[in-house]
Image (cartoon, rainbow, N blue to C red; front, side):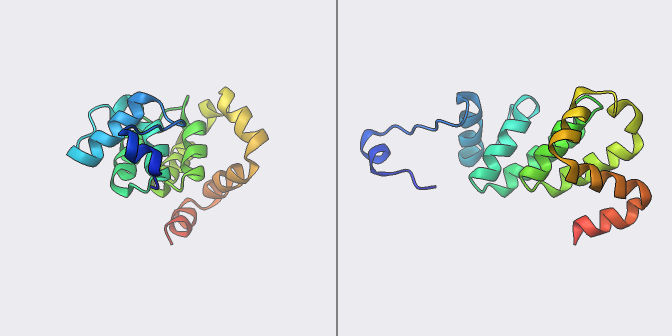
Length: 140
């Protein structure tokens, strides 16, 4: 995390790609080990934890997002998990797809993932054919 000379001299740190609440929660976690708003900020915190190499925070976010996984957010969370190398979340999202495929294919997220991420659809389809082999391949 290179902050630059300007932030050291001014005593201010500007993070332009993150909402204030997310930055505050991330800093709170870094200094206090607490993450009080992980339920509401989990997705944004996962992105921040990945960007700033905070593996423990990232894992906590993955766990929170896994708990919140549903038919409406499954596609978004699968894309996020793949984009930010959140392997646990990705594995659970794919498992969720297998058990809830019918309602998921009726969501706007499904249409988006079909257009934008056919590679992820391939992974999901493979897990239908052989769920155990896909899970083992992802964890190795």
